[in-house]
Image 1: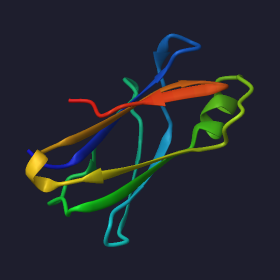
Image 2 (image 1 turned 30 degrees about the vertical axis):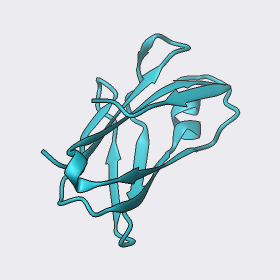
Image 3 (image 1 turned 45 degrees about the vertical axis):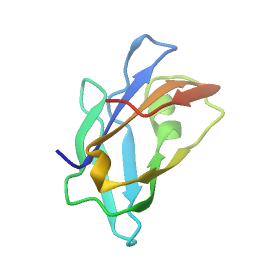
Image 4 (image 1 turned 90 degrees about the horizontal axis):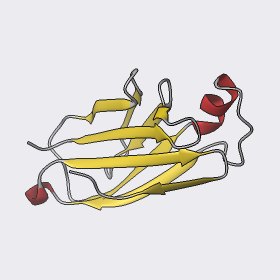
Amino acid sequence: MAGISTHVLDAALGTPAAGVGVTLTAPDGSVHTGTTDSDGRVGDLYSGALAVGTYTAVFAVGDYHVSTGQDSFFPEITIAFTADPERGHYHVPLLLSPYSYSTYRGS
């Protein structure tokens, strides 16, 4: 199954990060948006056929931190990654805290 999904976890609160806006720009310039659900997931951020190239996901974490009463250093987090449709589905998790973050290619 091809496509792109994400999962955002708030390490400071120990909970899924619900309500985080995510904007994905595909190599062809098309823009796809989603908002994390109560489990911190956007399961179908991009559900079309993937093209080879660089995708850019921007997470609106500043707004999320304000909504949870946390100070934040990052107003947004941008993750750029290269995709190849022959490698199947891409899952891009984000582990978030007010002053740091980490990411990796999930499964």
